[in-house]
Length: 99
Image 1 (spheres, rainbow, N blue to C red):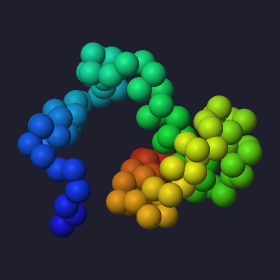
Image 2 (tube, rainbow, N blue to C red):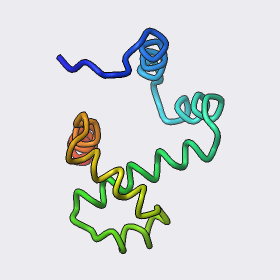
Image 3 (cartoon, rainbow, N blue to C red):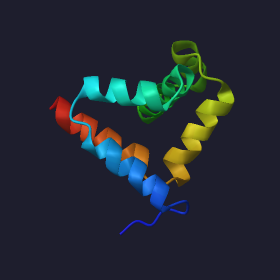
């Protein structure tokens, strides 16, 4: 079983709350109250960058398409290579939903 380095009760409570959301509308409502619009946009951008990196798109093309900085692209790439496998996990689930 995976054990996060930053796990604590407050974060557990947050993730439990997120898992209670049942649809996209509920996600919009909760995240609009929880985060700034910029934070939501940044998370969405990172997910898009991860998808593009997995599809072997160049940093230059990713930057053009997403407006992400090379630092952000590099950070996401490091997470894909050395991270907790979270991007890989969600991409696999998203691909399964598409099929």
